[in-house]
Image (cartoon, rainbow, N blue to C red; front, side, top):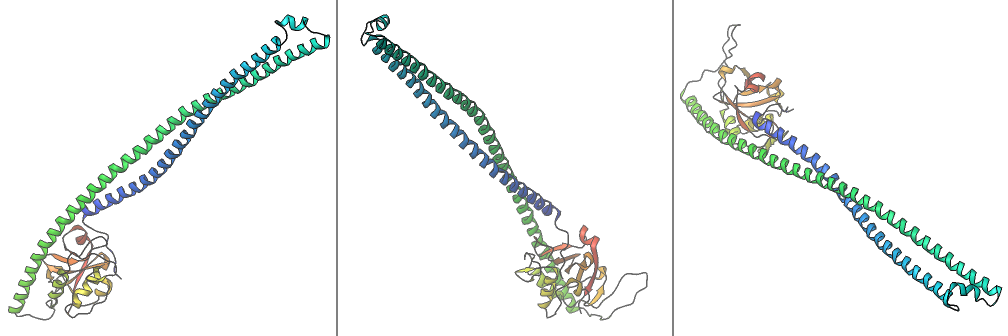
Length: 347
């Protein structure tokens, strides 16, 4: 098992959370923009159809007027022809009939022409009124549709503007995160150099100082536990050599580590085999008090859910959590201090 502790650099964590929130908003805006674009396209297509219908109806109206005038001319010509074919006036048409049948025929022809004129006029007028009414309705529809197109174009532009602002904000946040990460990397390099110096000094002191092996009993009221000196400062050096390696769940190689995977790999470099589990690793070695910690000791947090390797100076190296890298942290930092469980020295 390799639990993932719920902690991180507050500034980076908050910025990444903010970036995630902005990206979520961008996803929603993108979806809204797609709908707005579809609605805008549909409204412009509808407007184009209405405008085309207006042109067609306008053309038909012109044709109707032309046909009306043509019909009027034809009817007038026919009446003129009728009334002037044989006689010089209407009275002569009636009085000049050669017989009663001739007069009735002439009168029926005049009535037919008059009826035809009325019918044609009525049809053309009806058509003209219908076309004009349709033209007016389409004109109103065009005004309404132009308003819809304008509104949807405005909505589309507004969403695009919001997306632009959110993209700028996201870029700014990512820039801030990059600066924070760069500053932390520089700090980590300084901490690593100091840790390497301490480890080197500790190694030289160990070579020139007689070591007393064993454990000393203490009074019940004291929490101090004296354990045999650490022999595995080299494991701390190994862990420091992979600073900056990304956290990878269940990882135990230089390409990526989780917390217990880093410990297992670091101790393997000095010939010690440990299990890939922070809980199981707590069962190895002997307990050591915090005030007696030495480089190479294992430090545990969060109910044994997290483990690191002590490197001296109240600091330890560890693989914190997803999204972070192998780094140096302090036992005095809030989360570590509040969740500290204890330490073990591998013998």
